[in-house]
Length: 430
Image 1 (tube, rainbow, N blue to C red):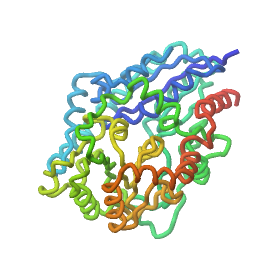
Image 2 (cartoon, helix red, strand yellow):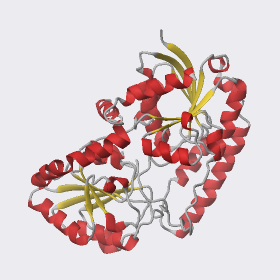
Image 3 (spheres, helix red, strand yellow):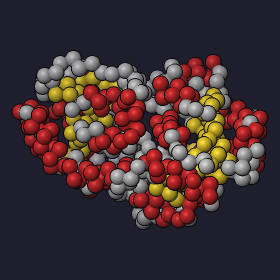
Image 4 (cartoon, one colour):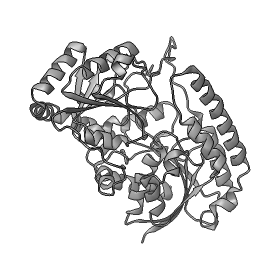
């Protein structure tokens, strides 16, 4: 017989890409396909109407259409929608940055007041309040989430709180950000682990890191990556959840996507600009860059090049469609890179752009460039024959990429769907 469970899940909206939906959707979809679990679920989007939800993002619509899943927009107001659209205007201008900072604080204060007045017992309904197997799924464990979860646990004292993966570790070093300048390494204990019942991780490495920070071993379970596993990538392509396709204008051009890094993760900005300059100097290349912000600021002569186009995340195209369009993907520290590896794109990490050490490079996955000489050799090899480069890439990198993906996405070829089912059943049992 199937186990009946009642789920409440919380989603913090985002103006840029809506990552929470990307992580929550495949998890719930796979759970719905379980032969051992039957559930009803009610999801609350905490941060009002953002651009992707307001425009009826296909992912959000698909989530709403999953059997027995109800999606509730807690802060659906016209005022908040207008404020979010204003905040969406990103720029390197100082005046815009100051404006966004003030506006962001106003929005957060507005949401904080609204959330504090929420009648959660009325919102969750009887399915959850009277359930014998109530579960709460979130993707974060911040103060706002902890506050809401504590109220939900009062409504039903049997409720278990499970934190789902919101990504995975991509750097081997610990001092990842610009401001990480501690003279001695300190393992910070995460007090939030005491408040959670279970935490699902994508990899054994992530689980070990969490245990070193105070997570009790029995609370951690490894499920792989629902967002980037084979089953989900194929399914979302078939269901056209990635939005509109990108038309290939010139099949003779070599298509390059550059997943630009965030500035604060130890990036050498000048060298990043020089690399973009060098790549776009090849007339044989068509280059698209994508980032959360207008970083880096390019000089006018470079910004005006015909073969260089810049995009913000989820502004015109999804990152998935940009990867589909590309033949070569450059990166310098992005969680989305797993999708590039899974789709067998020539994946390139110019190591000289950052003082971080990426785990993918430690595995030898993809092409890892030590300097601009390596970049030049790669570019000339691509111009000479992109087909030959692709063939050699797959041959040389097959084992290293497989090992990397087995550890961080597929959990050694186990079904991610099966891992989810086993982990949830185990949580109920305990």
